[in-house]
Length: 327
Image (cartoon, rainbow, N blue to C red; front, top):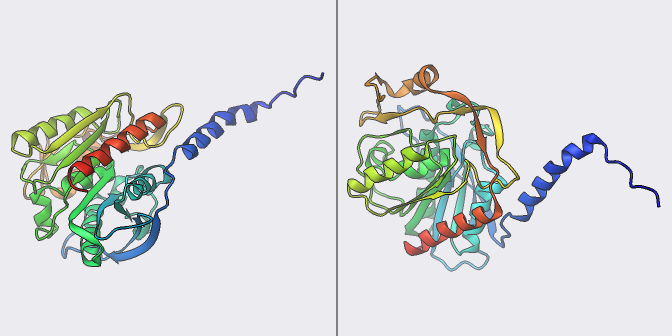
């Protein structure tokens, strides 16, 4: 019997990648969701650094919806709208009977991602898109206006976290409406509001133990500060061994040498929008990027490398949190 032919080295090197792609595909959501393409104007604020944009989004509905539905708005991470992350969560929510509006803040502006240059799309812009999505869902009539929440990973997680604060609600002029739940996943807690006044809606802060893109300890500390100020319905879970972007499953974390890393950048956002650094340095609202570049920004982050078990558990935890709060 002749020996099996040797596998060329070039092919051998690709085998782990093929295995990883198969694993990701095999653990994605299987959804019978109905999908609608929708557009709406962003929450335009005159004299701000936002422009009039028609927001592109996809609405995921359960296969047999019973209206009015609860809904979650999904704000995108710096990597853009991805199958393994935003689309996965939307499909899982639809499977659970909850509508999901996936907002593509990047495609709406001719972009794909901002992980290598965060100035391309700020959380202010993404936040205005999320607020516009809230108003669109309320006006549509198929959704319970008292059961519309917001979630997101990384940049989207910052949007999911900040939209509960009175400061942002006033600045974005949506004090007449409110999100009913907030699910920030791996958000940046390095620059946060000094004011701790919120709309009081429940929040589930989902964090990775080994996240080197953001500071998990700062997020835990921030949650403790908010609880001490009376926002007692904040839940926090730190997932053991989880990296940033754990939704992407693979044999090991992936390193992006060009990704901007702000995990060492810390400052308080004052009520007027200016910043105060830990050393007392103060700078204007538009000075964040220059300050970070000079003092704390680094390049290179790890992400992904999650497991199917971790992804299933985190998703189940999120659904359980929403169920507990009437979704």
